[in-house]
Every structure is written in structure tokens, then in C-alpha cells.
Length: 253
Image 1 (cartoon, rainbow, N blue to C red):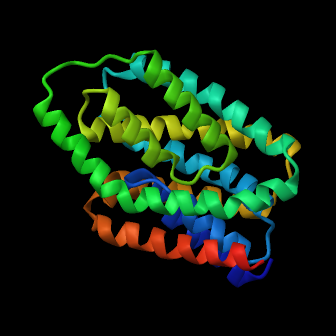
Image 2: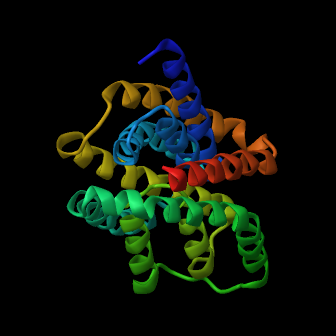
């Protein structure tokens, strides 16, 4: 690894950590960077899961005030995310490598679409909070959907946070900020579980993991403290542009 590769990966991890905490989909920054630098899609995915895990934990810690008094509910949802992440990692490691590389462009495209519609989802959730006076508790449907998102996150982490906020916004009555805090906590669970499994039985680049871990941890704190002040359009714009570039690159390979 050359020095400028290392710098680029670190910056990508820093940016991804910030984005993951504020919006989600930081993988759509780091994944294309790693593929462009010559890493296989599988190694890029597994290294991302491990390297970005500290960043998701950092972001969850940064949102601890929004989750004060709400941890019993978070734990219930975390169990579903935990089980889903295990299933997702098993799926990734069980399917042929060619199958993963074939489906990755479609997954990146799905993630880009989710990022584009994220503002509408957030606006809809906020409007629903204002109009709906009912209190919706965590039920079987929500747990099942969070489990499915955990499978997706264990298989390919990009945009899982956007999915979580959309689902919780439909089936919960909490504020958007609290939902974002729950999203960060659940994303941390998925990434830690998937990263732990990949660390033992999947192809991983440890120098990449180290650079992403340091960068994303710092980015997680930036996202929790000042990232919410950054223009959301700028964050999403970067994600969409990089994600589309990645999709084109993967399709041309």
C-alpha cells in the first residue's frame, strides 16, 4: 500500500464515519474507493464492515442523550439486528464469490436510490410525528423488518441506516432525532457482529481495516457533534455521486 492510498482510505473512513452518523450510507464512499484502489468487492465489503464498526459505535455513543431512558426498547430491536446480521454474514460467505460480484452493482444502485429519497422519508416521518397522537410500541412486524434489514446489513452494509429510519418511522412514534439515535445503535450492532465474523473467516485487508477504523471513529464523533450542522444536501450529494461512479465502475469490470 502506497502512502497516498493510505491517506485516501483514511479520509474516506473519516467522511464515512461522519455520514453514517448523520445520514447513513457511508459505505457508498469507502466501498468505491477500495474497489478503485484494486481490492475485490468481497474484500472491500468485509474490510468495510470491520473498519467502519468502530465508527458506528462512536456515532451511537454520540447520540446517547437521545436514547436516555429508551435503552430497553433499543435492546429489543438490537436482538433482531444481531440475529439478522448473523444470517447476512452466513449468506455472504456461503454464496459463490461470482454471485456476490454480480449482485453488488444492483445493491449499490438500491443504496443510491434510498439515499436520494431519504429527505422525503425524513419529512414524512416528521409529519407523521406531528399528526399522529397515538403511541406505537415495538411489535412483531417491526422486529421482523429490523431482522430483515439486519440480514441486508450483514450482507452489504450500504444504506441500512436509511432503511431502518424508514421502517421505524412507519411503526414507531418517537422523534426523528431519537430514531436517528436508535439507527446508529442498531447499525453498530450489525457492523460489530458482521465484522467479528469476517475477521475470523473472510478475506480481509487489515491495513485497510486499521485506517478505516481510526478515520471512522473520529468521523463518528464529528457527525454526532457538528455533522448535524452540515448541509444535508452536500452529504447526500457526495454519497450519490460516489455511489453512481462505483456502480458504473462495477458494471464495466
